[in-house]
Image 1 (cartoon, protein in one colour):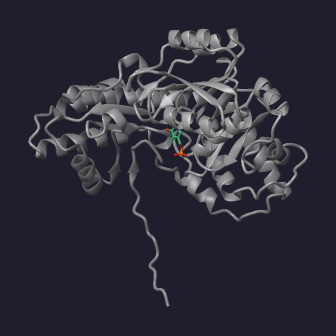
Image 2 (image 1 turned 135 degrees about the vertical axis):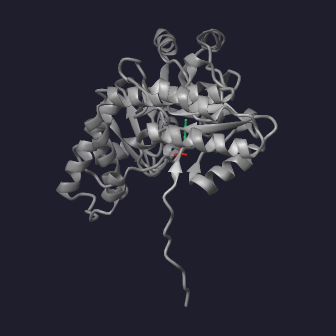
Image 3 (image 1 turned 180 degrees about the horizontal axis):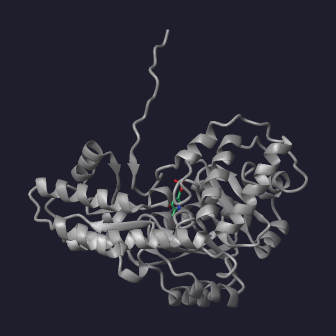
Length: 391
Ligand SMILES: *Cc1c(COP(=O)(O)O)cnc(C)c1O
């Protein structure tokens, strides 16, 4: 007989690139009794989830709902539903997630044109203008709003205006921005977008909110070919989330309770208050890191409130610091990716985990660890700067 012990995972402070610490209220929602996926009580919960998602996305889009799967399933949903073989798409690449979008678009049989920016910088609107001038018949332009691999917040408005001028669909990855930074789907004229539950929504990984505006929906309705993926086909899934309630696949019922609760928490706090909290805590973290003597990767105006990238001192083993943070303080942060591998840390302050306490605890822990490794760090200065920034 197998004798496998219970899990008993220790509570950690998740300050990496995701997943982020989940609110206890959300964890309790997961344990509520599972209902049938067509139970009227559950249908009411689904409708409320859609209503609250529209609030967080700041959109009137009817087709706004969570896909079953993590953020990447949301990404795939947007591409497979909008692209047909031979379509042309421009993708902005300035980190890992832009690269992932290129891969997905190519798998759809699309012709992909890339515009790039160095890691740690946003893409420039002029590069999009140039790409549109030299490539005719572009259907979609895709960009990551909050590039979690670099800590860059991409400004959207100018890119969106260019897309409107050229009648190109504007597709945005809002995985690390939704619930932490305004995404303003309607004001930014975003045609379609996707997100994930495990970053600033503070829900476990497992759902991917998406929103499709009228233009994107029209393109979907007028496809010549079937959507390549059966599981992610919105023409069918929208009939379950809409009035008809036609079974497609069994909804992950308890995950939808969890999302419902996490969205209720956002509605209680108010989205503007929530964005202000994310901004303030990240400013305090940045001020503390700089006062400690460390260098931030991203220029101030493009810093992402939900994720901060900071160079590790050249003479320390950055992975060892992360190991010590975990062992001594139960704090998880991320290491650098791509150009920043072995050179930087990625510190998330997302949703429930974006707190003054976590900022102070992290700065204290990092200062202590660096000091024991023989680094000269201004621990006191770091805390004073952070406290000063809280105001
Ligand atoms: C995390 C992330 C994803 C992928 O989400 P998963 O939940 O890991 O599938 C996509 N885009 C961005 C910007 C992300 O940060």
